[in-house]
Image (cartoon, rainbow, N blue to C red; front, side, top):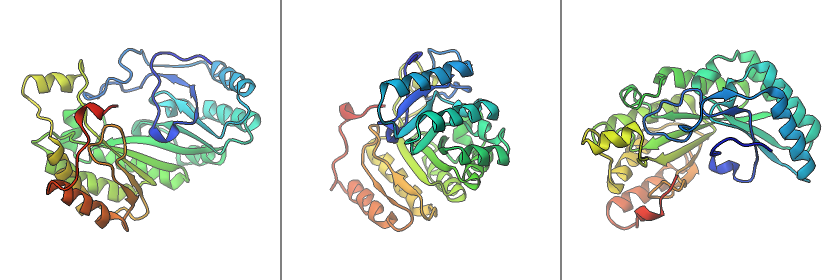
Length: 289
C-alpha cells in the first residue's frame, strides 16, 4: 500500500480499508482547513490504485468497508470509477460498502446516469461538506461554491440511490454571523434531507487564513455556550425527516445524536440544559480534529 502525506477519513470509516485514488483536495482553498495543504492535488494512475487494492487483498482476510481517498476522489472520471468498483467486486466479494469524499462540483459534473451506474456497482456513500447554508459564510471562508450548488449536489446524490453524508461546522460564522449560519444551514439541510448529518465544531488551525483573521481581530470564535445557542437555533428550524444526526466528533463541546425529526426535542433539551449550566462542556484540551 502506498500513501502520500497525512490520510483523512470520516469517523464512520474508522475500520475501513483506505486506498488513495487522488492525492489532496481539488479545491484546497477553504480558509479554515489545513488538511491537504502539504499536498499538490493530483489524480493517481488508475493501475496504481488497482495494484494497491490487489495488495490489500493479499494482506487482509476480510474487508467489509473500503474508503476511497483523498479529499475529492469523486473527481475521477466515471470510467476510472467503474474500473475501481469492478476491481473491488472481483477481489473483495465480502465488501459491504464503498465510500468516498466528493466536492459539490464533482457531484454536479457527473450525470445522473453516471451516479446511478456507480451506485449499482457498489458506491454506497458520498461524504460532502456543506459547512454552512449561508452564502455570506461560504464566501467568507472561500468555499468556492454557493449554497444552491451544494444543495443541488446533495439532492443529486440522494436521487441516484447513493447515501448522502453532509458535514456542517458549528461556529463557522463566528460571533457576527451565527444566527444567519444557524437558520440558513437548517434550511439547506431541510432541502437536501441527507441520510446522515455530521455536525463538527470549528477549531482554528495555525497557519490557515481563518486563524490569521482571528489573530488580527477580524474573526471571533464563539465560546461553548454560544455554540450551544447556535445549535439550538439550527435544530429549532430544521425539517429533515429521517436524517441521522450526530455531533459526536472530537471537536464538539457536546455530544448529541438522534434521528430527525423524532429526536429533535430530546437534543434540544440537552442544549437548553447546557445553556442553563446543567451540562458540562468538553474541556478545550480534550477537543481535536
